[in-house]
Every structure is written in C-alpha cells, then in structure tokens.
Length: 483
Image 1 (cartoon, rainbow, N blue to C red):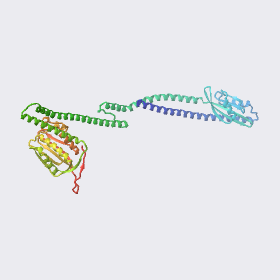
Image 2: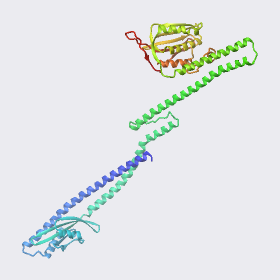
Image 3: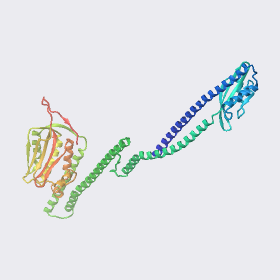
Image 4: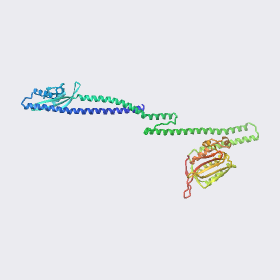
C-alpha cells in the first residue's frame, strides 16, 4: 500500500472517530439537558396538582362532608378543567390501586400499579403509540384516606428533537467525512510529492544518471532529507568520477606500459634475429649489438622505475632534518657520471629541512635527467634552494632547454606520458620519471610545480618543511603524510 494512501486512511479514520465521539457526546449532552429541564418543570407541575388535590380533599373533610369516590372524581375533573382536559392526563387511585378518576389515554401497566402499591414518589418513562410520556406518582394521606395521584406529561418533542439532531448530525458527519477524505487525499499528495521526487531521483541515480538532483527547498524534515540526499549524490558522483578517472589512468598505464615494452622488445628481437640468421659485416654487427644494448638499458630503466613507483604506494616514511649545505654538494658528486659535459650549478645558503634523503635523491636525480634530455642551450642546470612559503624551503631544478608547451603541462606527471616521444625514447626515457617524482613529493607533503616555456626552458620546484632545532642544538625528527 502506498504511503499517501496509508496517510489518507489513517487521517480519515482519526477524523471519523473523533468527530463521531464528539458529535455523539454533544447530542447526548443537549438531550440530557433538555430532559432534565422537562423533569424539573413537570415535577413542579405535578407538585402543584398534588397540592391542589390535597387542598380540595382537606376542604371537603373540614366542611364535614364524606370523602367519597364521587368527591375524588369531582376533584379530578376540576384539576383537568383548570389545566385543559385535552392536554392534561392524570388519574386518582385508591389505596388498593383501583382508579377513581382517569383522563389518561392509556391503561397503566404493572410497573405503574406496583408503584401505586409501594407508595412514595417517583417518575418513570412510558412509550405509548409512538409517543413518549413522563409519569409522576405521588401518595396523599389525609386522616383515614389515602389516594395516589398519577400525572402523565408528553415529552415526545424532546425525543423528536434528539432524533432530528442525530439525523442532522449524521448528514453533517457524512458530508464532513467526504470533505475530509478529499482534503486529506489532496494533502497526502502534496506532502508525499517530495518523497516521490526523491524516489524518482534515487532511481535515476541507480540507473547511472549521477548528475540527477532533487529540487526541494522546504525548511522541514523532507527538505533536510533532500539536502542530505543531494550531498550523498554529489559524493557518489565524485567517487564515480574518481573511479572512472582511476580506471582511465589504469588503462592508460597498461597501454603505455605495453607499448613501452613492445617497442624495445621488437628492436631487440629484430636485431638478435639479424645476428642469428644472416651473415653480416663487423659494422652491422656493432650497430645491431649497440641497438640491443641500448634497448636493453631502456628495459632495465623501465623496470627499475616501475619498482620504485610501486614501492612508493605505501605509507609515508619518517622525515629527518637534513643540512642543505652538505646534502646538495654530495648529491652533485653522485650525479657526476650522469651529467657528462653538463654543468650542475648549486645556489643556496644555510638551511635545515625535513626529508627522506634517499627519496629526495631519487627525485632530484630524475629531475636532473629530464633537464639533461631537454638539452640546455648553455649546457648548465641550476639546482637551487631558498625560502619559499612560511616555514618552507623551496627547492628548484632549472634548465634552459626546449621547454614544455602550456597545453602539455597538466599531463606530464601521468605515467608513460611523453611530450616528445621520439626524442625521449632516443634519449633513453621511459615516461614515468615525473610520475615517480610527483609521488615522492606527495610523500613529503607537497606537490611539484612547473614553470616552463618553449623559449626559456623549464623550472621544476617543490617546497619542504624547514626543520626545527631546539636550544640544545639537537635535531628534531618529524613525520609527515603524503598529499
């Protein structure tokens, strides 16, 4: 059963029960009030009749006359004459219960007879020919004479009024019930419309429309649920986007890795087959061996870089304070076999910074290798360190080579991405050096930044946290996590 139908049925049921209880109590209270008023009026009238009959009987006795049945009948007729014989119904009974006078339009039943015999005063109701009568019975005792007076009053209008009110109430109840059903149905549709929109949006998102949002701006719980739903949808869309991008990167990585393996392997197999299956001169043999050696070195470099990149996927290493004036000169000495005729110039002053020396050495080595491949016009590469952002040391590797086009900069840290694939492969590159450098930088809590122009060269920078030294001169070791 739909929620709107449940809401309509429950609300209609509550309205029906409450209205029926309230209406019934109201009609009953009005009837009881009218009935009690009639009881009081009729009781007063009966008391007046009893007093009149008692006075007449007393006058008869005081005048020395005998109080016979004829006298009682005469007194009864006189009472009905005073009050209108057509309207008034009363009867006078002896002690034994026999009627002396009666203007009743009905015969007293056993209950009335029992009340006459028992004596006392009482009133009761009687239904006669569709009419409702209120009966009052009183006993009068004078010397040796005892009589009973029974008065009947028509209260049929009271019951008819009650029935009329009940009829009108039932009609009004039916109209209100129909109106409430229509109103509750409309309100249920309006109240559940946002829920339907949420349900529709969730189905669309489940079907793949991750951009779908609910356009609900109310300030109630449903509006709050809508805003939470939109936040969830945005998070899901973001995660799906990240997952899609990760899958694309994986596919690109696999495709690039396969291509990088296929190219040198093709050359190695081809030249090896040339050496194995044909006679060739010494110069051809030398060139074939040189190609095999060159492509083998490329495969060796590719495997080493891949292993280094895989080893950096774990948690960040502890970072220790390093003296810049001792670290960078030692680094230049270790890079000397790589430089050839390229001069590596160092620029910077005293500084302590936090790093993992081995990882930073790997990072700078890759940056220097890229700078060498860029073929600086003055055969010089500058490695500098200077204050950057607050509490940061900015380390930069600059060259005056061919630079990087602006449209290529967003992609150069992707694995196997090469700006000039022919030249890079000719220089022995594998296309994952900058990806490795970016991963190392993130493990140090920073990112690589690039400033490049095809006419001016390239500067690659990163900022490391400056080390703190206490008053005793002891170095403090810090640990950081990747970005």
